[in-house]
Image: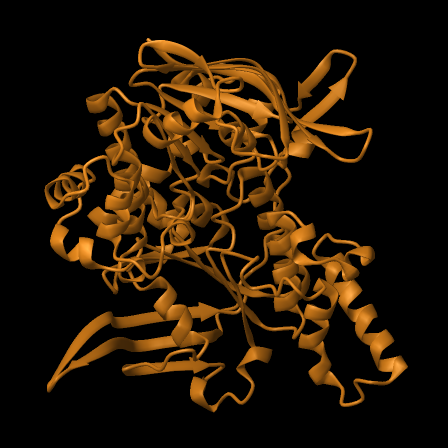
Amino acid sequence: MKILDIHNFSVKFKLNKTEFFEAVKGINLSINQGQILGLIGESGSGKSVTSQAITRLLEDATCSGDVNFLYHNNKINLLTCSGHVLKGIRKNEISYIFQEPMTALNPLLPCGKQILESAIHKNEEYLQELLSKVELTDTKRVAESYPHELSGGQRQRIMIAMALAKKPTLLIADEPTTALDIAVQTEILQLLKKISRNEKMGILFITHDLLSLKGFADTIAVMYHGDIVEVNDANSILNKPQHPYAKALIESRATYEKRGRVLAEIDDLLQEDEKGLQFLLPKKQALTQEKNSSDAILKLTGVEKSHYKTELFTKTETKVLHDIHLTLNQGDILGLIGESGSGKSTIAKLILKIWNTTNGNISYQNKDLNAVEDLSREIQLVFQDPFSSLNPKHKIGNAIAEVLQTLSKKEGSVSVKSALKNNVVSLLEEVGLVASDFDKYPHEFSGGQRQRICIAKALAKNPKIIVLDEAVSALDVSVQAKVINLLNNLKREKGLTYLLISHDMNVVSYFCNKIIVLKHGKIVEAGETDKLIRSPTSDYTKTLLEHSIN
């Protein structure tokens, strides 16, 4: 039975008095009870606009068509029903889960209280039932915990519990697993699928990650420039896509099989002619191979890290890193992979001297790391979320110029200001941006462009090593391919060395020449990429590969 039937649905936004932008263009979609529909496409394709507009959440949008929803065994058009009816449907029948739980959860309230605020039964028994349903253990502790006290996977399970609290017939999940490591991502998807089947709840699952839909979605709809260009069962879309854009989405993904050649970018795979949109076979352009140096530029020897908590007269030690040995040679791209809590980011913080080691030694160019006077000139960091690392009130040109101003004491002179601007413009052009971008603010750029800005900032001090902390994980596949190609070009041109922290084995196996697998703060496997991928020895590595490499 159809619980949602979308017919000829369009969404327009007013640009000025006479012009409109059509974000969604007369699409048709339907979801049955217990069905999981995956909606896939690049950022800006119209996925999230569709998910919010169907329940009239976008006040500045003009919608047309029919959005029929099964409500008390009657079809209700959500676009034309009364505000009172719509409020009841929003409150009880349709739930949303968003990408980042930390922005959706109240940091000042315990998680249990937040769940009960959404629940139809506001009692302790129902809370425990919900927490058990999302497979959280130690439910009393979790209920009393604040969001920051839980892991990313636990927070996402809290969001699912909040969504289920009102027993909806339709769940709309907008990129709910993007920032999660592969193990947690798999758990969350399995949980959602189990609940969908048991509760006969339909799910609209929005994502840019095709791999996440494998074994999860029943049906996949591919969205391109506001249009639904292909709808089919999941296996058909993933294995034998028909539309040129669907083919391009799959071809542009970073995989081990494409290692050693330039990633095909979607723009290069599509061509518009008199016959319409056409898929072009990718040019198999080999990456310029450089012989890496055998000289160690960075070395960790027996590194350990512990956190201590003192309560009354008791001091508790929690060891987060155990006996880490790591060598980064000049020109390496070393991948650190493992689930959340494995110690990847802890290693990065020790290398950047954000934290101090508990035991062991870190050396840089055969010198103790603590003896390096200005480490920022040697090692730079690019974060996962570029928006949070850019000041929204500062023009991006000025943000990069601040990094460069330490090169001169005459910051106020016209000549120095001009030189600074020229240097910034050169950096922007190196990462594929243009001079006019100097005077723009972060919100004026796409996610991929903002990541290029952060890379430009990292390049400003001409470092030898760049630490990439999940720097491409939140990007859709087309943007991810562009950024990875950019990083490869910069490595070749500037002789850079990279340390890549990631939960995506596909990206790591494509991009890195060496891989270290971490679990619970310990190295479980390390080696050259080809050997590790083809002949893993650790059961944990085999599990990561099983979930990732395709």
